[in-house]
Image (cartoon, rainbow over all chains, first blue to last red; front, side, top):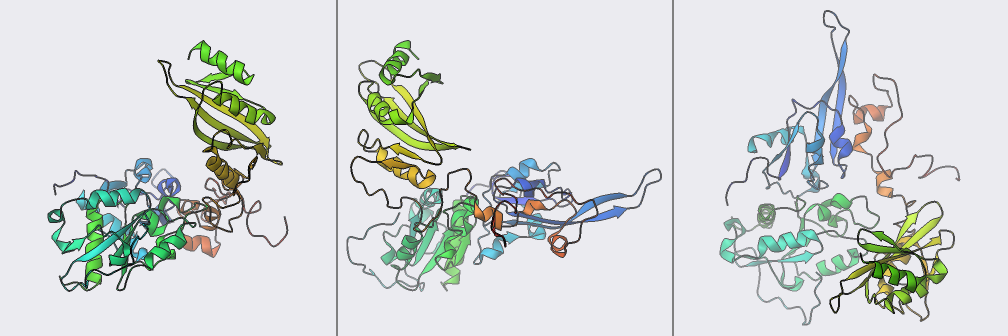
Length: 112
Length: 152
Length: 201
């Protein structure tokens, strides 16, 4: 079987460095299958400014048993933190195991 | 598609994972059924070796070892799905093919969709996808074969 | 769209049709529904029954829509006709057209199940049987006020704001910023409007 092009529709990979926990993908997902947890972190004030607060990603999970692979999450992400990856062999004996957490989602990245 | 039997169910040969052919019957409900057909309508030589000697187009549940559920299960149809499953002789296995039979998929919030065929049948392997590619199906079937104790 | 087809429809139905992208749309009064469908078949020649369905138009009406076609013949092109009428939500009753088009019976059963419109039949028919919904189903799902309970019951992953987690929401502590109304996903009514309640509504 010939190799598939990069970013072929297979699995959705997460580039967690780019994710700002903006929640857009979780809100736009029609299947409600993206689960995000984050917490606020405050950075010290720069010389002429005030302390800044930003959201830091804790949990990013996708439930593949619900996902319909529409790609809306990838399209809507303002930071390009999600990408298609051509992986297809991740069947599981338990439905719960089809929930991929942050680490597994970032592991898909080299495949594309 | 649930097929009507015109003859009484007869197990043609002793089927086991010990080396003889294992047989898979597809319950064709929706889009995934067409993808199952597209993946399986090929010469036996074209199938990956990891599947061993397999018949992916078993004509009836009575001669099948595995039931593949391909497509959306609705609440109105759920009793018929169970009735079909009960026609498989033991040992028998279920492979859920695609998001609809895994969990209800994109129709999880529908007023009439069963949220996964595992609400009705015991599922042994879940193949993700909407719809899954042939590679995904073969991966799931290979996993099922190993789960069932087939020789590697 | 030739004027002759538009004129023919106007003459046959007694209403002025509107040209919508190549299909003529004719709105008739509900008490003239059966007459209009009969006239569309003969003499207007729309012998192909395509579909019959309904649209919920809150607050007061359910609109019934029927698509018919006059097949092409003798060099004349195919002509399409969209017949529409309305019934009141409080009394959704309409004459059945299954005597004109036998196939309409199935569509009327579906509309009955999904919208609750009762079609009076000249002949007795087993229309009480469930068509697509399981036995014991309550409500008419395609009405706009039918709430999808799964969306109310399942927690929406998008309910969180950036910087919040399930643990934080469960603990009841506010996030660092000022509290604001939670965003609700489409189709989910406010808890005070729908859902379990200790008090009668």
